Image (tube, rainbow, N blue to C red; front, top):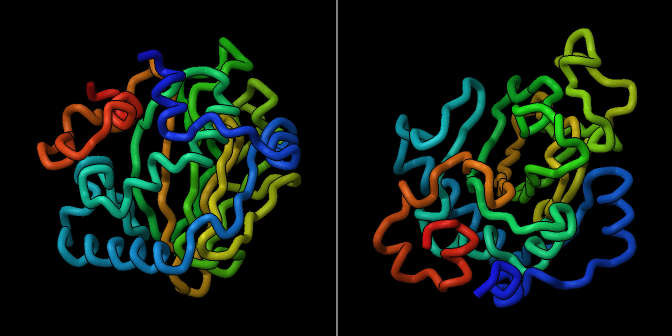
Amino acid sequence: MLGQDYLKAMGGCQPLSEVHQQSLDHQGFTLIESLIDDEWLEALREAFDRLVAVEGSHLAREHHQEAGAIRIANLVNKGTVWEKVWCHPLVLSVVHYVFKSEFKLSSLNAREALKGAGHQPLHTDWKKGRQDFPKVHVVNVLWALDDMDQSNGAPRLVPGTHLQSSEPGESMKNPLDPHPDEIQLSCKAGSVVVFNAHLWHGGTINQTGRRRRVLHDFFTLRQNQQQQNQKEWLTESTAQRLTPAQKWLLDVS
């Protein structure tokens, strides 16, 4: 089968609304509200907290740990509850619209900024430069498990910066500083944000300590290296339940 056939098998070739298309094209991101229903949301929250309790100091050993934040990595292999996250039909359709080419899952991780921490410099998620601009190499998807706003560290984005070839460090004196055009993207729990990951973005400080659990569903072009080598970390129990289309998406077949 061709990649397009696998994508269709997962429902990942749905037409998008004009609103989503316009936002992705011109702003570099789109917000899908209420994608996670209440029952699924509670299951994701419980799974998140259970992994934090069980893994303890070993959290995110498969990726990297971060001072002032809780991170969980390798979620593909940590329960079926995450499966719909990394192969959701609508999300795959949005990701496909941005890439306009075949892609694969790079990693599925989680992050929760703690009180007084979480601020990041403005950055992009592609560190190899844009010599081939405007080619899109990476797309990121944020799944909000809690309400996000300025008080608990909603992400900041600079709309339209996916349409330029420069990086924040090349255009700003200090990417930790606020950008005059940045917005903080507030949204309700259950919402999903899909963005061209060449867009300038970064986390902000959780000022109140109110919970801000977020899943990071990261995709890249087929020819690029994955952030987490899915074949290397694939467990036998995960492999046994995967469909051929899911194996294609993980690039483990």
